[in-house]
Amino acid sequence: MRVACVLIHNFAIQVAMINDPQLRGQPLIIGGSPFEAKTVYDASPEAIACGVEPGIPLRQAYVLCPEARFLPLDEKRYKETFEQVLTILEGLSPVVEVQQLGCAYFDATGVNSEYDLAHKIRECIFSQTKLNACVGISSNKFLSRTGAFVAKPEASVIIPLGKEKEFIAPFSIEFLPCSVETKKRLHLLGIHIMDQLAQFSREALGAQFGSDGTIAYGLARGIDNSPLVPRNKLRFISDAIEFEVPLSTSQQLVAAMQGILDRLVAQVKSEGKACYKIKLQLRFPSGSLLQRGLSPKDTTASREAITARLATLLEGISLPEPVSGMEVSLELGQEQGKELHLLPQEGTNRQKANKVARLLKMRFGHQPLKKALVTDPDALLPERRFRFTDYRF
Image 1: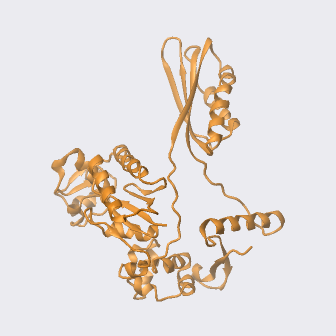
Image 2: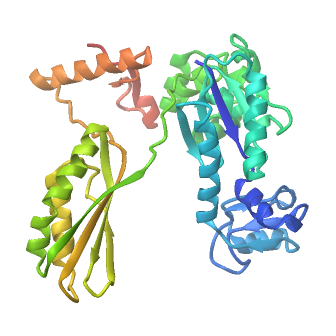
C-alpha cells in the first residue's frame, strides 16, 4: 500500500487570511480576545516565533506577543473549509481518513507518478480553497505524516519503497506518538533521534516503556502497520406524511410514523449504516413549523429504538394545535464497533476470542490482539510489571 498525507499547516490561520488577505505577514492569534479566560487555538508563524503556542492561555500569549492581532474562533468556518478539502481528496481516492482538522490520509496505491499526484493535490486544493497544502507519500501513515510535516507546499516529500528506515533515522523522537513522560525518559537516556532508538530490541523497549516502547520499536525502523480507516461520512435521509385529519395526541403521531420508520430503517439496513441523529418536524394547519432533534443513546439501526426515542420526544412536546403533517429525518454514518466481553477464557467465550483473533490476523496480516503477562509483580513501575505478547488461538 502507498499512503498519502495532506497536511495544511496553521489551518485556522490560513482560513482567516483567505477571508482577509491584509492579515498576511502579521502576527495572528486565534482563540478570542487577549483577556478572555481561553486558550490559543492557532497562531501564525510570526506569533510562534515570539514563543506563542496553541494551548497556552490567551493572556500569556498577549504577554509574549502584545503586537499580535487576536481573532475569534470560527469552528464552523474551519469545518466547512476542510470539508471542501476532503471532497477534493475523495475525488482522487475512495479511502480517505481524517486525522484532525487540516490533516488527512488517503490511499495512493497504484498511482503511476506519485510526484504528479502530489502536484495535482496541491493545485486542486489551492485553486478551490486558496489553502497551501503539504504532501507526503510513503508506504505507511507515520512516514507520510512526517514527510508532509517537513515538506513545503511547492516541494512534496516522496519516500521510495525500501527507504523507510533510512528516511526516518535522523528525525527527532519528538515525532513519536508517545507520551510526554516516555519522551522525557528517552532524552534522559541519551536517545534523541530515531536512529539511536532503532538500536534497541522490541523486548528491551517494551520492558522499559510498555506499549509506548513497542510502538516506538516499529516506527523508529519506518514500520507502521496501522490501517487506513475511511472517515465516517454522515448524511440525512428523510420521509414525510400529510394527515387528512390533523392529529392532536402523541400516541396518534407515534402510530402514524410507523410507516415512515419502516421505510427509513429498511434503507438504513440496506446500506449497512446506523442512525446517529434523529430530526422531527411537525407542520400545523396555520402554516407554522415545530422542529426538534435528538440522538439515540447508542448508534442504532433498530426501528424499535428509534421509535422509543421519538415517542419520548413527542410526549414532552406541548402541541399548540393539531398536527397536519410530519417529517422524520435520520442522520446516517458507519455503524460503530461495540466492546465485547470475551473473557474468562472458558467455553463459548474462549471460542469467541479465538474467532476474533483469527479475523484480526487475516485483516491486518499480523496479530494486533495482545495478552498481558505478569513478569515482575513487585516492580514499582507498572510498565515493568507486565509485558505484552501476541494472543494465541
